[in-house]
Image (tube, rainbow over all chains, first blue to last red; front, top):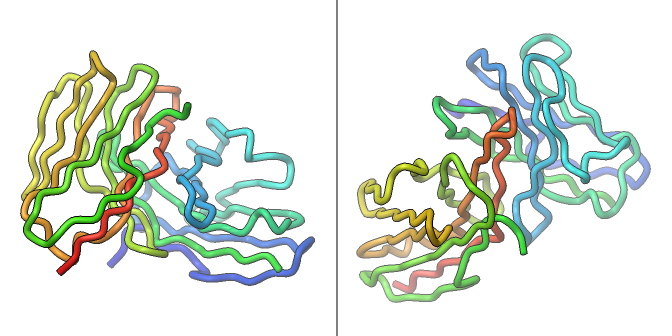
Length: 112
Length: 112
C-alpha cells in the first residue's frame, strides 16, 4: 500500500481551466512537497509546505499555483488557469525520517 | 549548470554487466540521494548517503560520495533487464525545508 496516494492518476483539461491535484499521505506528517516533471525532462521543485504554510517555492510556482491542506489530511495543488506548458507529471512527496522522501505515483496532467 | 547533473545521459549495457552512473553538484550538501523512475511512473527512493559518508551499499547498489570533488557515483552490479529505468541523483541543502534538487537523470537500458 503506497504511503502517499495521488489522485487522479491522469487528468486531461482544457487550456484555461482550473485543476486540483490531490495528495493523501497516510501518516500525519508536517513536511510536504510538490514537484513536477515535464515529459523527458528533470524533476523540478515547485513548493514545500510545512505546518500548513508554504515554506519555500520556486520561480515556477507563480500566482497561478496554490497549495493548501483544507482538512488537515489531503494536500492539494491548484492551478487556476492551465496553460499548455503545464502539461507534466506532478509528484507529491513527504519527508521520510532523516532527509529521505517518499513520493506518490504522480498525476499526469495533460492540457489541451 | 544545474545542481545535480548526471552522466552519462543514457547508458546501454548487457544483462550481467555493471552499470556506473555519475552525478556532480555545485553547492555544499547535507546529503545526496539516488532515485529510480520507470517510464511514466513515480520516483522510488534507492539510497541516501550523508555528506560525512564516503560509501554505502544496498544489495546490488553501491554509492560513493566525494565531497571534495562534489560528485557521486551509483554502481549497479550484475545488472538485470528489470533495472532498465531512469536514475536520478538529488541533493539536499538545509534551506529550512530540505528542498531536494534533482538532476536530469541517466536513462539505463539493460539488454537481455
